[in-house]
Length: 316
Image (cartoon, rainbow, N blue to C red; front, side):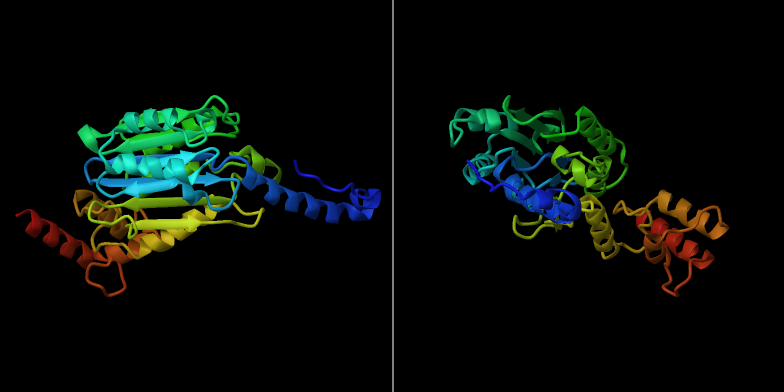
């Protein structure tokens, strides 16, 4: 049991309010790590590209600790009263070919503290067009729940409500783009004050956030994408920070001619470039470099000729 000495009345009232606010903030950071790890997260696979990914956020620092990716295989999140042993057991099972359902069943039956009711899991792999499973223990802190689809699992605890999970799912499924874009969209959908209710008083959804993606040729310690916002000031959303860091990274990954950043050069890129040239649309800062096919610093008709020639020559 934690004991805190009584506060002088002058500290609580009047001129002491600022000090009391500081005291509450200190206590907040002392107590949060003693409770649940992570609040809302997603694991997912792309069966067309073979990519696996995960993203999450929490009103504690270091939420990335819940995530394990196995390139070309799948992804695991173990959260809510996280333990390293349960995490390692889950990873060992995936490495040995267990299905998501089998991994969760084993974890529940063999919990390291014999207390699976306080755990939450999300597991997904690439087998048979994608398989997923999730588990939410009855003693996880409310609001708690999970959602699964063939290629994803979304789970959360200490939530504002079911709408956090629902909005994450809608954003993931409705975003046309790469795995990293879909994961980022899912996190953005939960970027509301108090998504993790422990952060409600601070007007932010969480204190830390992360996004990770592995391509099939990657190794576990050398991923295609890993951005970790480990902690932020309590006036800043870590999901906003994640968003800006992501697009800084994305600028370094463009392919000349891939104007929509879907890692393909196709008719959609031609139509976008034509719209830019005709003035129907203006390219974003990210779209200028992949649109400048002749590398002269301008987006113009000659870029369209080069792109069409490239595409016809590639198809032919």
